[in-house]
Structures are given as C-alpha cells and as structure tokens.
Length: 234
Image (cartoon, rainbow, N blue to C red; front, side, top):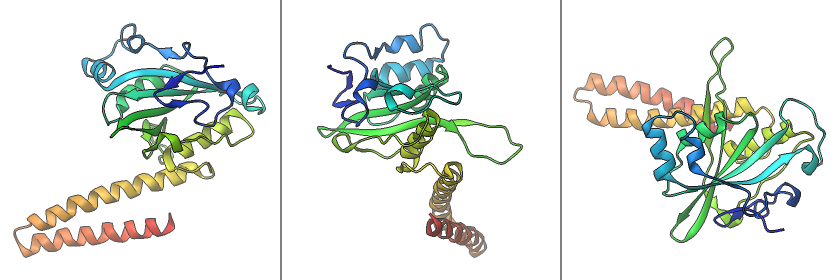
C-alpha cells in the first residue's frame, strides 16, 4: 500500500504500524476547511494561508492497530503532518486545529532547511499548574531534527498511555511519561529563568548608578542560583 506523506515524512518513516497509515490521496486536509466554515480572525487565517503549505493525516492510531486494550475516554490519536512554508511553527494555527478534534493529535511539523527536511513534534496540552487555578492549554513544540532520523515510539498498554508517551516525546524528547506534568513544569520554569537571566543581564549593563546595578545583580544572582539548581536536578 502506498501511504500519505508530508514531504519525505510518512507513517512508515516514523516507524508507525502500516495498519495505522493513511492511504495515499486520502490524508490531505484542505487548509480552507479550518477557516472557511469556522469563524477565525484575519491573523489566524493568514497563518494558514501564508505559513502552511499543506496539512496531511499520516496515521490514525487506535487500539486495534497498536495492539493495545481499549479503555479510557481517548479512542484514537491522529498523527498529522504540517508542511511549513517557512521556518517557524504557526502555533496558533495548530491550536485551532487541535481544538476542533476530541482525539489527541501529534503534529509533525516539517520544514526544508538548506535542502534538508527537518521535523519537530508538537502537541496541545494543559499547562501544569497549581491546584485551584484555572486550567489553561498551550501548544508545546519540540526540538528540530533531521526527518530521516525522526521516529516515534508507541509505549503503553492503551491509547491513553501511548498519548502520554507521545506527549513526552514531543515536549521532552523522551518516551518516558512518568511524572510528566512535573517534568514539564520544571522545563517551563527553566525556560522562564533563562529568559529572565537574559533580561537582567541587559538591565545590569544599562544600569546608570551603583545602586541600580546592585539591585539588578541581586535579582540576577537569585535567578542564576535557581536555574543552576533546576538544571542539576533535570
């Protein structure tokens, strides 16, 4: 069977079961279906028009083709290839697509860089937060890697367990989904501290008085101490 592909990426190149692969010609999703019938802002429409070349369903994972038990609310996971026109992932467009489907979606973003196809996984997931706070979702995008070296592991005894593992692979580049929210929260905190470090370093260089420099340095030292501790634990 010839299968659907997004540039050089297909279910088979990702290491997914042939039984889960979408046949060639049946996986293409017209971009217009995501912004013609559904009201969207002009900016979001431009993301689909300008930033995405094509959208293709590569695989539909379910209990039958993954040889797992059928339990839980999640019955399938779609693997969708998104061929980019440029180099940047249009996060708002992926979030819009994910909101329209009750199933989990593993986005495989594909770009061509200096003649080489590269991939980055993306998933929409709740941001780990504190108890009592309103849950918010966001799209997490993983690291870019050469398409020829990009594969997916199906770990778990159910689709829900596989979905958690896919989230771990997309966000943390690891198939291990143990304590996933805690590990994601730590990764987010590390990113925030690195951004704060960069900002405070600039503020320190611009400070005009010794008092200002000392105040900024104290904050910078605190941020770097926290960052070093988290990175040591990571």
